[in-house]
Image (cartoon, rainbow, N blue to C red; front, side):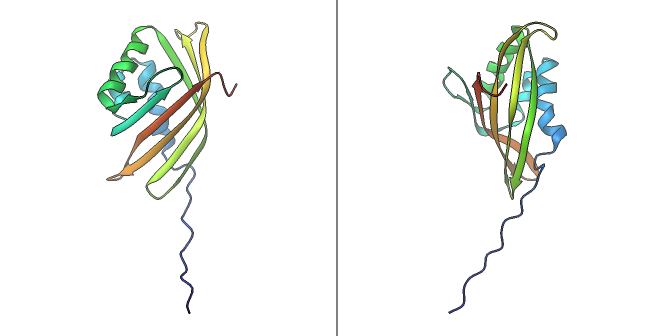
Length: 134
């Protein structure tokens, strides 16, 4: 009997191009909710502490626009960015401030699951947990 050998999957770090990952923060802070929503797949979910899951780019854009309209700014620090094949995860911490120089209103940790389709990385699941990771 011959044992089947399957090669170990290739692991990439960073998997998601750092400038693409950073574009969420840049787009948010310049007030472009449409650009933030464009980073998500059609079936994506955004899960934030204390809220029901937000499903799909349209609802994600609406939620992000509300945050932008309230004057919030974000700083996101990715500490992991690892992928294999068509799937990657990015995790780290975030901080939310009332305005660019204003007081901190929230900090926490996040995990994003990204999927590559047609050579484009998009977020399929974005989970934020307030109060952790500082």
